[in-house]
Image 1 (cartoon, rainbow, N blue to C red):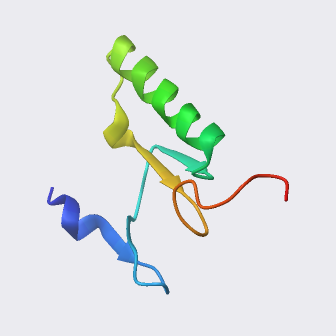
Image 2: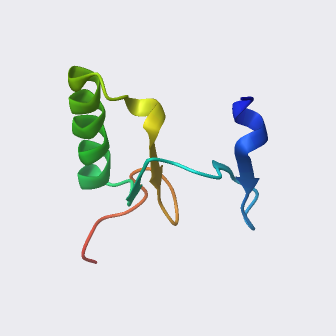
Length: 68
């Protein structure tokens, strides 16, 4: 399957996968750490890896402080 054919364009013009096995909301330190640890564990167990994870954020990676 062509990965590019299985994407959607958001109202902000971003291209994201239409489907993902794992979705993490928030690209701050906690979301990115969760994604990294999940990918590492999936790879260690032979169950996939980073290609199975999508991390979404309303602004961007590390765009702002939490709790403010």
